[in-house]
Length: 242
Image (tube, rainbow, N blue to C red; front, side, top):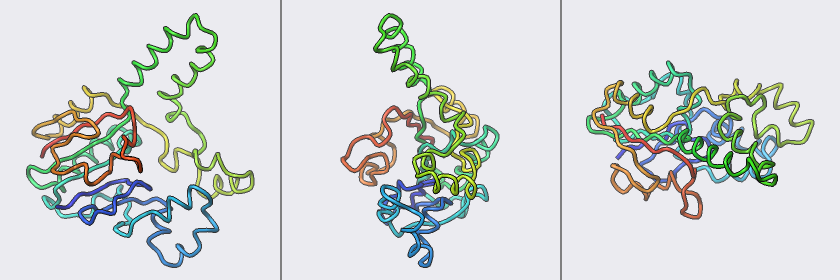
């Protein structure tokens, strides 16, 4: 079994069936012995802890150059909270590239922020907060959950740093969009299913975090946190079969 975990960031699996692929600075530092030794200088606190916990089965690769596997060669392509960061034409090309790498009958599993869920949460809360001053003070959170990632100027991790480090990171690494952190589009169960069907996936299913057409999916723990709970609550889970 070959499972590609694309754009994994720090959410990587140590299972030998999984190839964790990303181009993030953290993975590049982890992979190179020299830069790994310098990591404590550049990473602090929780950032450094995540770096230390990354497994060794990492492939450092820029996915804008395609998926570095032969056609019809992998069993599963998985990516979580990645597609929304791509412009729509790029997203189509990327999903076709995923299909190219999959074996016939292979599974593409996509995890995305669920626009329908966010809209329902927003509509429910606006009704509650309209005549409740306490809830009204919390209402901006429900707006932010839908659009903050699309309008963010500064990368979140950088915004939490001390002033000097924050300034240096912004100069060296650029803003949130340059780093691929902003959302370019959002999907719901109708739009994502329709997109996969148009791109030639034979069958498309909506799943949950603990259900899948992938054999023994829960053993890989890619959709689980350290406590065995859903890693990204409020997500949309869609699978397409090549």
